[in-house]
Length: 347
Image 1: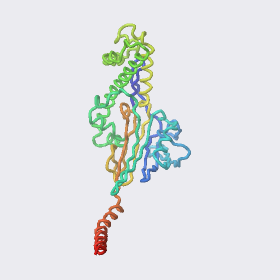
Image 2 (image 1 turned 180 degrees about the vertical axis):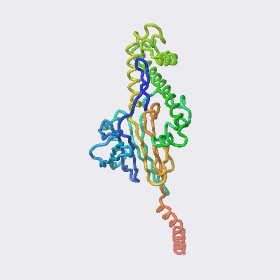
Image 3 (image 1 turned 120 degrees about the vertical axis):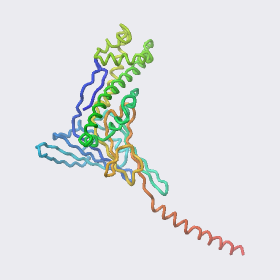
Image 4 (image 1 turned 30 degrees about the vertical axis):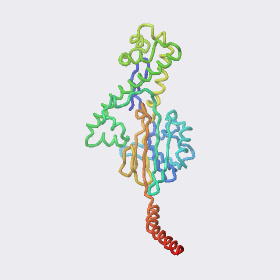
């Protein structure tokens, strides 16, 4: 479940259930920069339609479908899709033509290979552009433990919630949900304030500035949190008649802030995994037992800043070591031989 925060008439928080197939995207990065991309989906219905897809998939992919029935008689449908992309730019082209559930969210892949004679390093990342420009960082509302939990992949969270310390993690999850509501609400109000101030300045109505709105931020949050109608809330905070005088700017700012927040709220979450060539030397995701690096991909993670998922690996160029060792042995003898020949010629 997710919470939606929006500057509606009451700035109410409404529940949002993420529908569609549970999805894991596995990127196997090759040394030449090509990426074998595999998307594993499961659903309680035999529905894998394009509007539900978390990442772009088309007819050029190879598909495998299967089905399972549990002891209780519950049926699960599975679909696996696979395609080899020649490079990260090909993945980015697919994102640009995406018509799935997350088509409005900007996502980019990046690959870099660096040769350093004795070693070669490989870097792969995917970045999701932030939804809000003036949102608050999660550290202002969440504890380090809550942030760490928020960044865990979905399967890891499920295991913790069903494990030996389930009571602890269920309490942590519930606390996180409650604090996140405040974080989301505050962030949307902050975004609205900045947009409204800019629109008032642009329209020549500079008597209502960003600084004035920001000074009343707590009052706006309280009024809207108490389910006040938007126009009434503005007049209650700023004075009677202010909303009518600046209605166009305030309403337009509200619409823009809601639209930007909806990029995070409506985002259909999934899990991203990367398999790198050679040994991992750095990554900012969760390291699985099989060596894969995993990240959750959900709206709150790119609410206030770009969400960068990266992994870097390094291979040893043994051929370079062998060549260097041979040169270290042969070169002195070769130099000595040339010196002796030179001396003989001088005589």
